[in-house]
Amino acid sequence: MGLHTQSSAAGSSVAGLTASSASMKRVDPGTWPKHHGRCIALDEMQNFFTSRVSPMRALQSARGDGVIDSNKCTGNTSFPAAVRAIFISNFPQNRNRFMCQDLLPMYEGTTQGIARTDFPLFVNDNVKFEKFGVVNKYRLPMLKTLVQRAWSQQPHEIVIRPEAFQLARSQCDRWGDVYDQSDLPLFCGHEKAESIMRIAIAAANLTFSHSSSDATFRSVEVRKVHVQFAIKWLEYCWEEAGYRQFSEFVMRRHRVVDPVGVAAVLTADCSAEEIEARLTVIQMPGDHRQVVAGMPGHTFQEQMGFFNILIQKNVLSQQKNESGRTEIAPTRGGKELMARICDLAVEHPD
Image 1 (cartoon, rainbow, N blue to C red):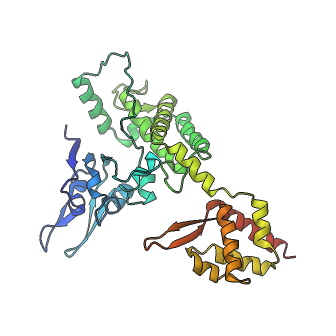
Image 2: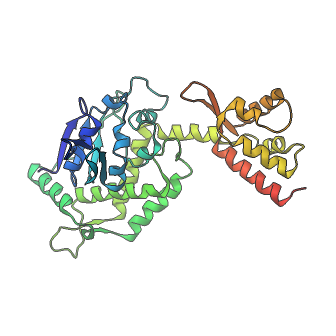
Image 3: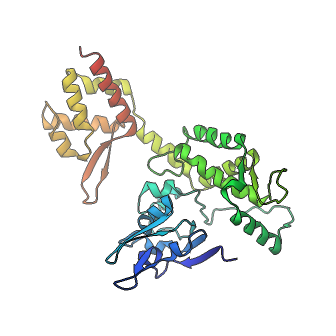
């Protein structure tokens, strides 16, 4: 039908996906802009895991704005490149504790690209495929008609009932207390309502849903039941990926233990100005020894003990940087607690 293409990333380059210089006078569009308005399935994405240039970074503008910007020696060129993308990959060699973390190598560790992903689908030896006793009535001619109908629809032919979109928004409110939105944002707040609606539109088209007032049957009507399906589908994909368990782990790591006791430690024998200065230094990410050395008052050993308490209480977290040195930075719970302490110190300086 010419609506999609399947390609392999094996032997491909980022320039081949985006744009390349054919000569000193011409820039040739890559695979992405050549399939503007269509669907691309890109296989063997693991070949880019060790690449110096990540395709996900190069495709960031295409995934966000539907445009490829090429800055070559021939000048700056922009190509329209709005596509539906399917990325297929083997698991990375170094597996993670939670399956959803295996997405990070594909996105070069960037959370913005993960937030723009509608859903991940993991397939491994543990997946159980259930057989349903339903006769498949969708034969090839009907499938062809179904797909062509969906891809030929104009924006005004997609009718979304108000209660359907409201359900998507309210579901995002409920997910906000369950799923992590920072370290691995498969769920990204109310922005995820757009993903829900995209899946719901697909479900509505799969069932030939249409308005009773449309005699041409070209339009699609998205109802509450289609949104319910989209919600269940996302929850299924996230559960298979271990996203709920990962989120619980991350939230525990960012939750301050004994906030009242921590506040007492942070403010002990300090004026309002000293509290503000201390909290300012603490919230500066960097090498832990440099941060400790910058703390006002007390000896280096006393300050190290002070920082160890904050790490144990999840006010601060520590991790290795690219050079292998230990860095410390406030957790989300730590930032919130210190912001409250600063506010109280200003309101009650005595």
